[in-house]
Image (cartoon, rainbow, N blue to C red):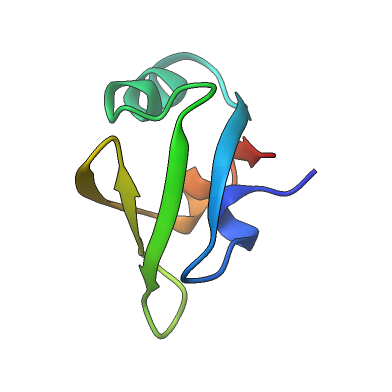
Length: 73
């Protein structure tokens, strides 16, 4: 399945599920990334880390390591 890390700038997708456990998963959810949330990839840094996203009407930067834990549909 495609993860958030695989998305390119300009793409929009919906969160299918969150991988990971405990505090890491909780931190991702606290940022507003939950199942069914639509995410738009605004930019990706030249070396790929971090990614700048639009989530729930605000801008968010996320590391590739965290983006790998978010499956998209």
